[in-house]
Image (tube, rainbow, N blue to C red; front, side, top):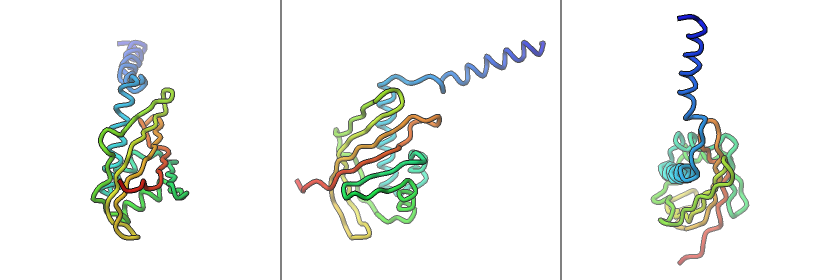
Length: 155
């Protein structure tokens, strides 16, 4: 086989291998993937699984909470590693999660979150609304920005 034929064969093989990575999923597939990823993130927080959280969080991720505090990716990972919070529950209330797409590379998840456990200030049991913004990167969807409301009044 000539070097030209070998090069063409290699180019075709690489093209076939790389095609799925370059092709975008359908909007329904993107919404489903982000929904699963956000649920996976909540479960990782509940377990204080910093490794799983790091895989999902964008390198420049920040979280803004209702009290006005801002937490970086590293703040969240350090909190998990040090187990500053021990969760009994860190779950989205069933049926409250909505994933909205904005263009091809941005998704926003909103849901009602139930948090129950113990932290530096003692036990807590509260619900709050959150919005998590995901962006598509070459490595896949990553959680880039979060905003959480103040605790809702007791039901």
